[in-house]
Length: 88
Ligand code: FES
Image 1 (cartoon, rainbow, N blue to C red):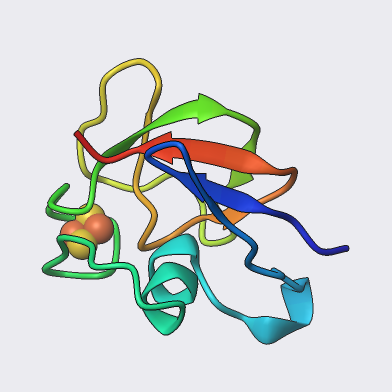
Image 2 (image 1 turned 180 degrees about the vertical axis):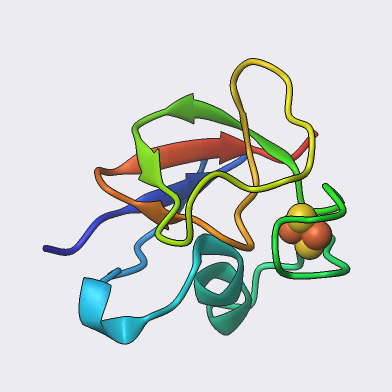
């Protein structure tokens, strides 16, 4: 199942297949989107963005970094629907 990812109201037609084994951060970087990151494993919170639409899944379980309501850590989650994120 392919999903669309929208970043800051810009359409990024990324096809995300579960078999690709790519998290949202890696997928967006592959598409040329610059994202903040550090640990890339759910510990530091540097990659934190707001999820304004859609659902994500953390295949490795809940990450350790603190998140506010509506935030996600794209370094360690996958979209389970079309999603929209806001990076500011
Ligand atoms: S880069 Fe550290 S939590 Fe995502």
